[in-house]
Length: 112
Length: 112
DNA sequence: CGTGTAAGGAATTCTGACACG
DNA sequence: CGTGTAAGGAATTCTGACACG
Image (cartoon, rainbow over all chains, first blue to last red; front, side, top):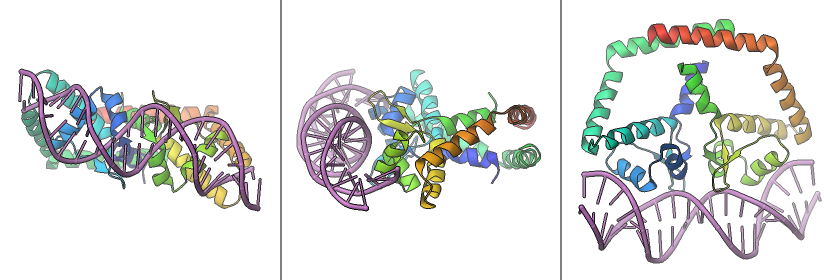
């Protein structure tokens, strides 16, 4: 596994509990749960039912917080998110991602 | 900030609570606290005093678990860790790290 | 619509200590 | 030495609901 792939898994791994997310984002626990209800984020659940978030979720929440401050409603934010994810999976973007992966593999091999 | 540096911050950021670390490593909470007492790991404390670990800590704990299974004592493991960290900070390694950083910055700029 | 709060219960975490070996 | 456990207390998290607006 290349270094970059390994690092990416850190970003996506859901291991952070809601209190820590609250500290990191400045959002209240209530707000974080509400944004989940509106499907703006989807934490996992631990074996005992507590919510677990990733760094990716935290970034998304900070983005959400900014938009909310501008007065954007959660419904609109949801649309924005869907749009961005669509864009991220179009063919041109996928080609860029593959190229980046190859470059990284190459240079990790040569210099690490 | 380059992608690689950003990812690294995920690996080092102390945000995971001890119960999650226990699940992820298979070690008991008691064991994890004991390894801290022996200075094999150094979690941070949240505002309310709970321990917070990074992905880096988790990797180290898995390494520790392997060595303990082989019967290696914590004192020996501590020496191993000190040795490895020394090696990681010698001049040759630092040069490699800087080169890798430059390569990443270059290719992130060109292709992302 | 978005967020605060009180309610009741369950699970977590902390420390210092005793046990075993 | 390394780890389990019971003890007591403090803080966390969960859900469903009422409040305000």
